[in-house]
Length: 474
Image 1: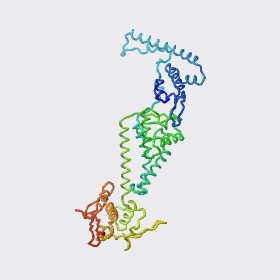
Image 2 (image 1 turned 180 degrees about the vertical axis):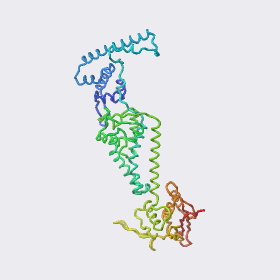
Image 3 (image 1 turned 90 degrees about the horizontal axis):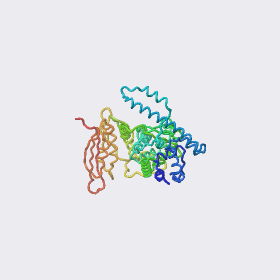
Image 4 (image 1 turned 90 degrees about the vertical axis):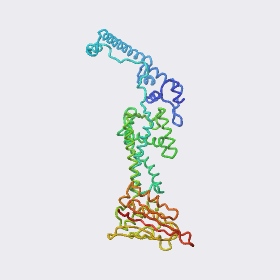
């Protein structure tokens, strides 16, 4: 039978049933899927335990009865002797209360020593309550959202350095093919980091950063910290049952299953049989949720900032032609041209890029030596004032070249840094579909574009002019 059926059969809550399992007084069978399978014999055992514990016979005595080290007659005889003492103690307390009432004692002038001395002369034992002890339950934090947010926070912490490495170290564009592959690899490596780091934290501190924020703590049931090996076993089961190995859709299914288990008061698969884990919560004060929100916001902001920084060209401020060319080549690779046919040399002129080993590159529309060259204007110090391509004709509209040139120049300006909107403005405005004329500013640059269909007889050709220059100061 299931645990719900066992609850109905015995009148015990599942918290009590789990407690007696942890204490080794009950050992139900297991189905192939790991769920408990209770029998009528288990129900009889629980009813016997319920009776004896309601009489306040200790767990150790019940355990001795199960193991055959004691007889019920001897245990009951000992317990009757204890009850007799308890009865005497209750009688003594009753006599003291009655004496205090007859003396018309008041709290303000109560002679406590007189009555304490009278109590001390009576039997020294505790009062028995004839009900199931409240201690016969396992403390179990229900709060499924707090546990989910704590677990997700920890995973994002492990993921963060990998994302920063991809953005700031490898300069990968998250929207590119390489960036998407790196994102998938990082998601898997974050689980590897979790498997290495979390067992150490559980062993030394009994918690993790996310769990600490929400006041959650994990120990063995006897109060000892998890060993490193136990922590690895637990974390692996979290990855397996909690995250579903990170597999799309299956991940969501596992999260939903764990949420329902928590609502039902069940232990999660990584904390139950054959392990003995005690999951507790310190408190549910509002500051914990506020702290989680602030730190999570900081992580999101850091990730967005790193994305913005990765999209900036390497040279900022006033540019030389060589620095502009370096910016252009960097952004050409960042936005997906892993193997460009042409790159800019230090003089800002096109040069054919070496083809990757084992590949054949066919260059179309470049019979005259490659793409149309840029023209540069500089000041007397050799610093770049503008970049343009004037009145050229090409078989197709070379929009990507314009975008990269505009970004290489505009994002280098002081006004074109992180969160300036320069990149989004350039990408939006230079998404050219048909010939048209327009001028706009982005960052510290003024960008203009003019394109016209060629004269009759060559309807497929387009004549265009493109300029990016420093914005004139008023």
